[in-house]
Length: 484
Image 1 (tube, rainbow, N blue to C red):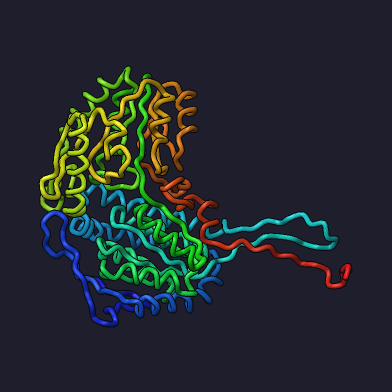
Image 2 (cartoon, helix red, strand yellow; image 1 turned 90 degrees about the vertical axis):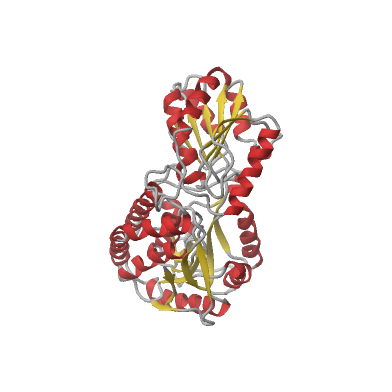
């Protein structure tokens, strides 16, 4: 597969003709060759988006809605291409790939429904004869950057919501999933959006720090929309602060599943298996920690380990039935092995799975994890699930909050009043009672607290606030009297 830059809706190579390779996480073979943009290419994309903003920001809601709906259809029409690209570039299986496409298409349709919801309000005024109101206006050029792990749906929200608000977008694809990301740009172009409404660039990983800072610094960029690791998110936030650019960040997590003593154990195990091992645990809201009351811990862990042991790892390109594919690269596998060794050396009990072989790692369950182990606080971002036993719900809340992160959580209990009490005390952007930590609906606000970021990426009015400016507007009598 080969990818190009897309500026002014024109496919073009990098200005220096430079390219870079993406290799399969399963086999190591080259699967994608992509154009490697430099700062000059990035400036060209930003300036094209700035030119397009003048007209796109003035379009009516009917046109924006129609184009976004068409883009949703175009995304669905490319389903098989998305599946093939995700298998090759990021080791995703059929389930995660098709789930991504479905979510992305739904998100574009939800964004389309917001076209007539970008509204202000009237404000009472003490000045006689004055009409006072607020209006929401597009911001300008949005720089959007998303990772490889949910490449279709994360790209969709980074593109659709800014566009429906009347902004233009420069989308910097992940170096790990360039063809997957190019496919969604191609779907937007095929829908008929005006030239330069969306511009698409890729870059060699080694050029990322310099290139990204140049883009943030460009005067035409007015918002930065970033999804990725907390480490990189802090760098992005610092750069945005230096250049006084508002940013919206969704970062890392260690999502907890709290299992109380009266929980439906089988239901809790089902939700935990899904949340912990879907796409090898490489999802921002992956269930990394199960915090379970001692009274049901043995039964829960026995069933959990039994279920985890049935999940097989393999290359989804040649083993369609495998539940887990490869982790994203060998460095990730080595880091996971080090976390696992540290935990078992310090007394954690391995109940299922084990160390990665190359980039393949089985569904792994660690029981008896304590705060002295690295995996207790470090984000694993892989198929290792840790079990932490607690005496009661108060200790469960304390352990759930004993982390710098705060994106997603879940609580399993039969007593709904107690479950709600626990959910309200967990410091995360979302909590799901009797459901998985992995959950997404385009109409619901999604984002984190603490080191998991700030801002909301979905959900009606919440996302409109992120991608518009609120302006106070008054209409007054020209003959009014002033004290001076």
